[in-house]
Image (cartoon, rainbow, N blue to C red; front, side, top):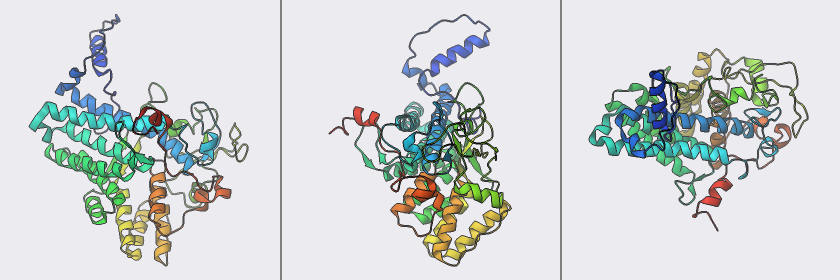
Length: 429
């Protein structure tokens, strides 16, 4: 299995049992037997480390599935179009409210992805000793740990680690930076360019949050044009293996759970045909009424057009946007606009115009929305710009309560859920 492209291994629990099952299949013996509990020490075998690293990516892909979908509705990357048991956009989420009742799965999956990667780094390092510094699986584990922490930082309101106290959200990004730095070092020593470049791209993105613009630009400049690093999904099994954003906006989901109607994507794609924001005009209404509007036009996203469509974690185009934003931070808005318009020319759409720093920021905010659409990054961007009082306007269909059908104080992150509050002694009052 190629660990760079296929993070769909199993999570650590039960890994040994799967190995036994596969051996049975290889021998064509279909008699079922239960070997009993698998000893944790079995995972200390270096032969298991590639599968262990794959399991880390698989855990992150499952977390991404939930947050990209629900967060996309709350941030109005998509609009609620209906509701189902599997793909429901709850009445609160329909209004942009992420509460501590309905977000247990989002939190638990995301924290599991972080813990699995960080504990895997510990296990591999203790087993390999000095050899860990140039081991491919160790590099991959550090990379997943970096992405898992960035994912939490982009989306969760508070930083909590392994039953500890609540800390500021920025702690996720500090932790991500450290893991990405190790992934760069070990990936380089192991001569795995894809891991090294993905870690550089990941570190560039978290350094934006840490306001280390010179470091972010240096990392971004080291990522080659055309580079992309993705989470894979699979057309096997059930919803946990599939790309949930696609499933919940496809004919497979019979209730048409979300739509691009009444989002900024609607008019933008219709007028520009930007290949980064495609959707399908179905010509019909969603089957289920929604809170704000009854039954609405069902025009589903088509950025993800199959069950096994991957979701991007990093690519060189985001690196260009980091360079552009750094220009704006330095008040060089013409330089930032030049970078953005070069990117737009690259995909065949008309350039933006701007006559001031504030207008350039407006374009930057839209360009990041386009480039990172439905990748679980928008809530983080909205919160970052709000906290920093960054100039520039957002589209009214992202923020205006009346037009976007959201509450005035809509959520910009997932709160710590009740499952954590009730079980973490540091959070009990």
